[in-house]
Length: 317
Image (cartoon, rainbow, N blue to C red; front, side, top):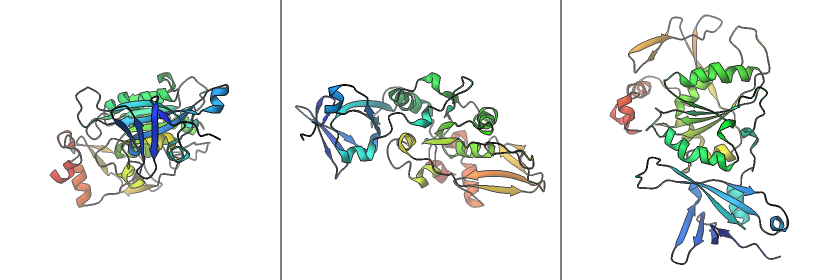
């Protein structure tokens, strides 16, 4: 049986499995699609004899130019392709209709939430959403009416979303997906709210843990780096579209009654409002538990002025 011709952008293409690159041949040059930039490959449904003869695909990729002059420093592209080899598809082919993007709604409100953390890292979240996430979702047939966009306006924005929207629905047994365009702070804010039931309340119910996707746009990105989801150029978006859910290990730090949390760059304090049965206050955490010198460095560098310098802020502090 004759193998279908490999093409991309309507040109002859060849996949080099050894180096992980797809080469597209033009009359005067060769374009290279690198493995690290590919978000996913999506098979396009066709009908009739054409579908039997040649499978059609879209290669969804992230372009990150070295010199950026426009307003959006990230660019998404869907490249039409045919006849892609099995070795390439094994690495990149995803579901045409991922179920976690299509949770049913009983009240007309979406169960897919996207959090754009504008202060995380170097402040790239809004650009990354506009340039990559939104068009990637459109390529999967997901329109803006099918997800809830929350752009942070304060350090409490994620906590408020979790407490007011996500937690009640989770406790009502509703499945949800959360895509965080943030650093580790967004994860910590979520796990401090998304507990099955209030301690000591005696409540029981069908708590459904939300699925959380992370686009690593923070400074340290400890969770993304330790789990390997930040090992390519897509900032974790590849793993969101193609990965399998894994449990997130968390911990609880207990403090004596009356302990307070430093906020507003250490200028103010606020009470910790979660108590255990003995009256001690608690903080839930994930990713990193810091103590002593390391905790001081992280806290001292967590200011608006230091954040401009990205990961260099830790050394500066």
